[in-house]
Length: 378
Ligand SMILES: *Cc1c(COP(=O)(O)O)cnc(C)c1O
Image 1: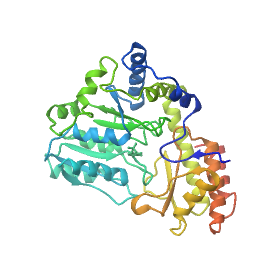
Image 2: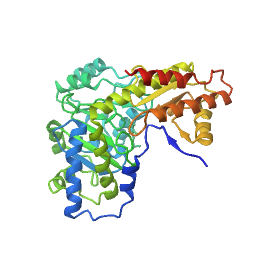
Image 3: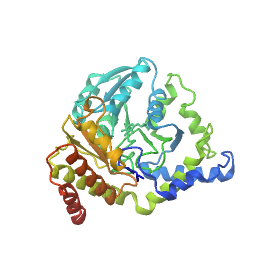
Image 4: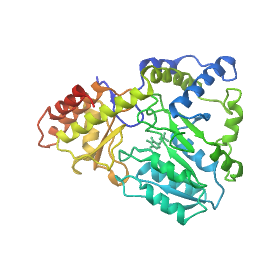
């Protein structure tokens, strides 16, 4: 029998108190009972996004909210800037290409962070740009972009700033309003500790102005429909009732611990994870590591095997590399319900797998290094 440990950057483990809510009998969504729950979670989401604006809940994975943030703001032929530094940043590019938009690319090599001054330059050279699309924590490489600085730059122009905060929200400080983010999106299966299936999106007044003129086709993802039903604490179409009921519980978890404390918890786990990787002689990957996932370079001959053996032999699920990074990195998540003990289990098993795969490492070193950080704190 194998006990499973999810140390992946989505989906993440679900607290039993939340999971059990997902199993309760379904209630009808056009009832006062559901409306009360919806009202509660919609209000609480504002606190998590750190915004005064409404946050809409969609039935989709995070990418649905990304698509929504494209098709509701723009019209065919519009110019946009995409600032990508990894697989998820590139997703903005793919969505935009499918919509016939004119894309100005301000992309950097995977592992680097996007350069705010390059965005500034691109905005100066292209005054018709309607929106800048980027990523907060680029989960595929493990870096965090400087959204605060980018927000300052974009807010001085007519363009809006759209940020994918799918993996970073809850785990790492993100300030939608204060950092002048016009559109922020997230999803349920990362920091929110829920099963996959919900996405969230919020828009500033500046972004709503673009919505008024947008001509790209949409129906299910037409954000005006969501705004209209928000008033009566409803969604335009049948919502994933069970997930929203569970979201109420996971938000209770978040609020009980406090958002600021969760940021500190993740920061400490990130520090411990980096120490663990380095103790094994693995080089950290990423120019500015984020606080929700840690990436390290591994020998290419065993990269894919590490992930496979960890999962099959020990039940520990970690992530490998995506795209060009396939087989070259491993990624340990430390967000949501992943705790100190989970991280130590991950490193203990990683050590055994590396030994099995023939790497010359000293057993116990990663665990000891992580323990040291966890004992001493930040
Ligand atoms: C997980 C993730 C996504 C994609 O989300 P899906 O829920 O799989 O659609 C997008 N961006 C980032 C940064 C992510 O971590």
